[in-house]
Amino acid sequence: MGKANLEVFAATLMELADKDSNILAATSDSRGSGKLGPFGEKFPEQIVEVGIAEQNLVGVSAGLASAGKNVFAVSPACFLSARALEQVKNDVAYSNQPVTLVGISAGVSYGALGTTHHSTHDVAVFRAIHNIQVVVPADNYEAREAVIAASKSKVPIFLKFGKKPMPNLPRLENTFEIGKASTICEGGDVAFIACGETVALAYEAALLLEKEGIQAEVISMHTVSPLDSEKVVETAKKCRAIITVEEHSVNGGLGEACASILMQEKLYVPFKIVGIPDEDTVTGSQTEILNHYGISGDGLYRTAKGLL
Image: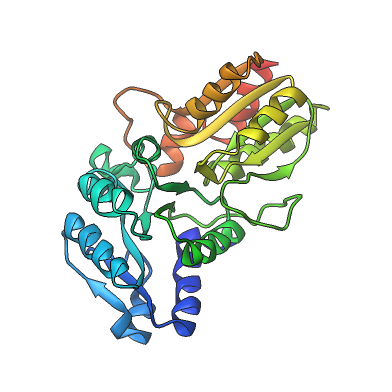
């Protein structure tokens, strides 16, 4: 078991800041929850605290970026993608300021705090805004590589991180590129196309299916925008069924993005979107909520069995 992806983000940002004084962390009273305490202690001149003011966070970050700073704006994803949406659209995306927006405690990571603190809309919102890339790393490797890639990017990026420790996943390619999916394991019967922390759950399901002679392919679609459409098409031509998995609403996220590609390419395979349904979200821990909606190794195993 590895660390939480958020911890890897903070450690990687410290490494980068040690080599480049233009790298700044900006936060809206999220130094602790964003694991930025050590960063602030080591680089007091490279951290900006705006307080509980997410709109200011994004506006200030855009201004700093326009002055040549490499800014990582860190805030809970639920607030960054809703309260500060106008600033993200106009100050960052429309103005083409290369700010990296870091949504922490994303999905249902806040668990029992309820719908006000859940962020199951962020991918859909940012997919609808031109000129912002949406990246949802699966494990520690992808988290580190995504932060490094963001530090070199010349365009706005939204990075989405949860809170729990993640297993180190196997993968066929030891490379990371924004916009190019990563294959965790290969199979020709059913494919799980997942993003973020749900990739590990899809891999659990693949191992369960393997015991019954069912070969499942697991793809980490870490970049939801721009989506790796070639990989989606390739997978549909190879596998008998496709299941998309996301810690996000079934509306407007990874699943609908994949479905759109398949329909436009006239590729009609058994297909299922697994995510948070369009209903009042249940309250509980992150694991309890995901289990309730079948976003678990066993739940995805059963979904695959029913689809084949």
